[in-house]
Length: 119
Image 1 (spheres, rainbow, N blue to C red):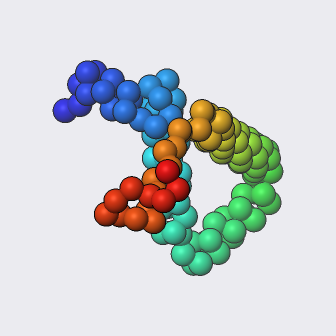
Image 2 (cartoon, helix red, strand yellow; image 1 turned 30 degrees about the horizontal axis):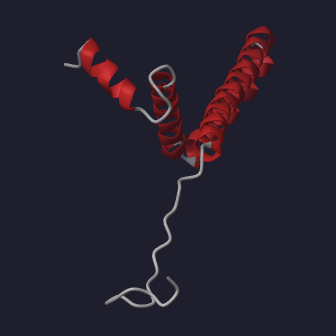
């Protein structure tokens, strides 16, 4: 069983920091679950669903309209989640690349056994 201390330690080690770590993990799990379900859907299932949607539109137009609106809302939510994830990644990338350049030390490899003639 995972304790609160374990979650705190895991969040502190997360590359997006403790404040975004759990959210990023949830988005990853959601994306993995949706992707898995999409792969499991076969052509027969999609044809069956299309037939069901046609029957529902003809027999229960109000229900069909509400479900269509809900589907549009879910698509918008998915797009917003993806945009939030991209914004988090881009923000961190900017911080990672905008930092001070590491100081470098010149190492002369011309004469490995003794002092260089350039000194």
